[in-house]
Length: 155
Image 1: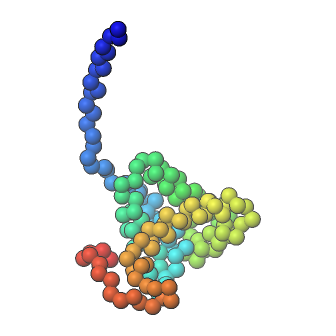
Image 2 (image 1 turned 60 degrees about the vertical axis):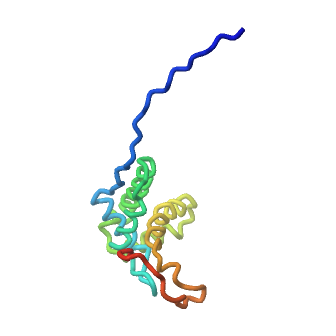
Image 3 (image 1 turned 180 degrees about the vertical axis):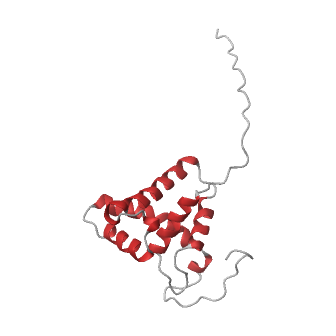
């Protein structure tokens, strides 16, 4: 006959219901603005990359876990410091035109890892920049599809 086995009850663990919002340092914010200005020109619908991009990027980061934030911070600092060997300055200290030229050398590099690093750096910033209802308010020919009802305060 098998003996009855008693399993002790697991201790209760408090579950955090609120998550501390992810935040960038002022220097990291400057890097995001510099990258956005260098890679996102003004268009017909959207403004050039800059302060608005930074605001949407920070909203996009809201709720990121520490691991994700660590990766994104590492990418930002990789971009910031990568400019030093060829320009003598960090990326955020370059003019937007010079930063664009620097990043274009990466985009045209024969080295696949350099091109992929550039994609990894700028993709999250571009995703945040274009995460806007205006991106979906146009048809394939580019003509306006009519009014888009936006909640107050979304732009």
